[in-house]
Structure formats: C-alpha cells, structure tokens
Image (cartoon, rainbow over all chains, first blue to last red; front, side, top):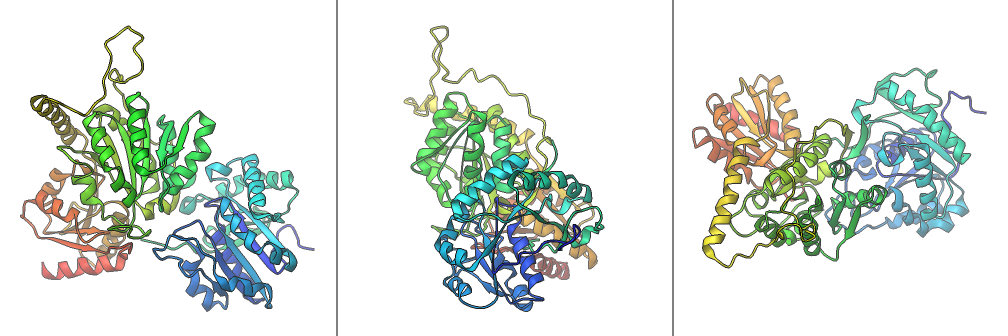
Amino acid sequence: MVSKNEPILPQRKIIIVAGHYGAGKTNIAVNLALHMSSYDSVSLIDFDTVNPYFRAADAKEELIAAGVRPIIPEYANTNVDIPSLPPETASVFVGDGRAIFDVGGDEGAIALGVYEKDIKACGYDMIYVVNMYRPLTATPEDAVFILREIEEYSRLRFTGIVNNSNIGRETAPSDIIASIPYADRISELTGLPLLFTSILWDKGLCKNTIPRPFYIKNETKQLF
Amino acid sequence: MPKVLMKGNEAIAEAAINAGCLHYFGYPITPQTEISEYLAKRLPKVGGVLIQAESEIAAINMVLGASAAGVRAMTSSSSPGISLKSEGISYLVGCDLPAVIVNVQRGGPGLGGIQPSQADYYQATKAYGHGDMRLIVLAPSTVQEMATLTGEAFDLADIYRTPVIILADGAIGQMMEPVDFSERKPREIPPKDWACTGHGGTRKRNIINSLMLDPEALEKSVRERFERYKKIEETEVKYERFMTDDADIICVAFGIASRICKSAVTAAREKGIKAGLLRPITLWPFPKAAIAEAANTAKAFLSVELSMGQMVDDVKLACECRRPVEFFGRTGGVLPSPAEVTAKIEAIAAQL
C-alpha cells in the first residue's frame, strides 16, 4: 500500500505516456525512464510522429549513460518531414524489461494503433499527463474531453493521471498548489487515480503541501 | 487573465483571435502547423471561420477577399509556402488591403528542411512581392512577443492599409514559454470606409483593385503609398537595447538569434569584454537611426543570423562604414550556440 505522500509509479511492462500537445509528456517520460533505470531494465521509445523539434531523442546521451535503451526514429531531428516509427519498437514486446512510449500529443496517439494487440497482450499502464496552464486543458472538463479523444485515437484506456501543471521557468510553488483541486477533479470525473504531481527539483516544495510529489529535472533541450 | 504556457505558434493563433481576427486561411507546413491546428479547435467556438485551402496561393487570395470585405484576416506558412504567396502579397499591397501574414521560417533554399532558419530576411524586407512596395516586418524573439506583436500587426495593418509580416522562426514557433494576453493595449483604428461591405444604394460603391490603366494614375497611387511608408519609417520603428551604453562591440540580432546573443553578451561581459546587443523588433522599418547613434560610441558591430548573412548589409548601411561590421551565422537549420557567438566576440575584441 502506497501512502498518500508517495508517487504511484507504473507497474506494468508497457508504460504509455500520452496527453495534450505541450503537456510535458516527453519530460515526464524521460524522467520516468531515468528514475526506473535504477531498479529495472528500461527502453524509452520516441514515438512522437507530430513534433518536429523538442523530443525524447534530444536526451539520448543522458539516457544511454543512465543505462536506458533509447529507441529513436531514424529521422528524428533531421530535415525529413515524414513521420516514421522506429522498427526496433517491436522488440520490446518480446524481450525482458519495461518499455516507456513517449507518444505525440492529441492525434499523435493514432500511431499506437500499430501495436495495439501487442500492447494489450503485454499489459500496459497509460498515463495522462496534464497541465492546467495549457489553454486547451485549462478546465477539468476540457482536460477530460481531450483524454477521451486520445482513448479513441489509441484504442487504449488510460489507467492514471499525472499532474504536470507548470508555466515553465516562471512556475512558483503557489502555481502547483493551485492545480491540486484541478487534478483531483479530473481524477473524480474519470475515476482514475492521481499517480503523482511533478515538481522540478529546484522548486524545493515540502512533501506535506503537494500530494504524491515526484521530483523531476527539466530535460527539455536548451537553445540559449 | 492569468499567465498560460504556450508554444509560439499557439500564441500567434490565440493573439489573432484576441485581435478580432475570425478569418484564417492556410495550408499546413512544418514548423508552423500548430497555428492552424489551434485555430481549427478555437475558431468554431468563437464564431470564426478557418479554411484549409487547396494551396498557399489560394489561401493568400482568400485573405485578399476577406480583407476587401472589411474583416481582419490572416494566413501563415513557412518559407517555401510563403514564396508561393508572394504574388498575392503584392496584390494586397496594390489594393491597399490590410492583412497579417506569418512566416515561421525553416531552412532553404528549395524545399530545404524543417529546422529553424532566418534566411528569408532579404525576401521579407526587400522582395515579398513584385513592384514598388514595402511591408512592415515584425520579428518576435519570445513566445510573449509572438502574442503582442500579432496584436500589433493587426493594428498596424489597419492603420496603414498594408499587409504586415510576422517574421518568426521554427525555434520560437515550437518552444514553450509563459504568455500574458492582457499585456497589450489595442490602438485606435480608423473606420474602414473603403471596404466592400454592401452600400444598399446609399453611397458610392467601393472598388478594390490593383490594375491601373493609366500610367500617371499608377504613379500617383504608388507615390501616395510611399507617403504612408515615410510616416511608418518616422513613427513605427521598434528595437531593444541590452547593455549597449558602454559597449565596444554591439551584436545586432533579431528573433531567436537575439536570445542566443543575450547569453553570449552576458558571457563576454563576465570575461571583461564590453559587449552589448541591439535587437531590431521592426526589420522594416529598420532601426537605422539607433544603429547610427550606437556607432558614435561602439568600436565594432557583429551581426548574428541564422543565415549566410543578410541583415548584415542593413547594419553596414545604417552605420555608413564608420565602424567595421562583422558577421557570424549558421544556416540550413543549425542554431549557433551561445559559446560560438562568445568566441566570435572575443576574436573581435582581440583585434580592437
């Protein structure tokens, strides 16, 4: 039994990180992979067919250094504008270890259909990453609407919620605290558990203010 | 309204709606597709219209039609798609129609690539269409400015009856930053008594047209338009200065390159080099006077661009050869690193 102050981390073999565009899926997926690599064999699949830049492939070196196996499309971060999926993806369903899928936003979840049967056969957790400060998921109702859309696109069902509410570098602890009722309401509307609330390491929030805190680093590529 | 976290492309889309633009026409292209993606979700909720046209050429001509009917209209694309729009842009100018055209630049020439670029500077500031013409060109450097300058673009377009270009790049289009949409106050807009809104037999009809049968009449209309350009050059120049007052070396950079330069200038200052940054926000009208004034005290200029060097020509013209003007850039979709720019500043400092 996990206490209310501990994050609930996904337990099944396949972990799908999905959500609205810009919700912070890639950052959560990379942080989960780095965290889980300390006790498990983990592959991270850059499964984003939507985003031209800012993707899991950017963290490739760090992932390899941590013992994570990155599976990255051949054309990620090149000039090729053809969404393609890495063929090595198929290997994660037959091998040992766990696999984290970093999926593109909204309609990007359509790509999961390719492996629908394998994902269901292996058993999966699908986590809904949500940010209250993104305008199209600003209310719990809007967030649930997009959650249902992604379930239709992917033909899979979400199993938990991750509250990743932030406004980038300007995020104040009060912004995260203000998102707690929002995340609780999404959990209530969907019947899905809140797995954790993400907090950047340098924000220094104590565990008593935020339910199920999961401390993360900003893994987004810095341009300047 | 509280701050929200947005991609640069989304900020343009939301700012357009805030500016009362309910008519968008476009054709998808990376890295700007989020503009139409976002508007496709939002416009139907606010009574607007989005048409995914059959081509970029169709889209710009739909903008012309909507603008002639007196509404605020916008199109957006990325480099190759903008080239296709150039005929329509010239027609908009010839018709004295306001419009906002967004270019989220990618690497070229040709189909080029999908990574960020600023290599359309010449095209945007000198030749977005044929004929004697100018366009106001705004260059945002933050996601916040993607929003504020989009609002400003619609106001400028209506005030001066001209198309206005937002010259962004893939990096600012794709990156996410906080935005506050209440930051900008709208300007006063003159009534659109020229628009084809239906006269009901109560007034003389309005005609929107760029064909002039009489050369004298065409010359007169061009000269009238250039009077407006003169006023724009006198009153609408925008730029930002960062640590330029005592600077020996002044970087000139716009858009994403200016963000990289800010880091480089700060690093150079830590090494004891008096560096600064002058960031043009309007690329046309270009901040000529500000650069000429800076040339009174600075010893050298460094133009930093995501291209082989285009704006550097305007910097040279503005300081009238009184100071050396150097260039550093990466092209083809490659971003210069702050360290590369700092190294170039150090190299210039060593020669002073």
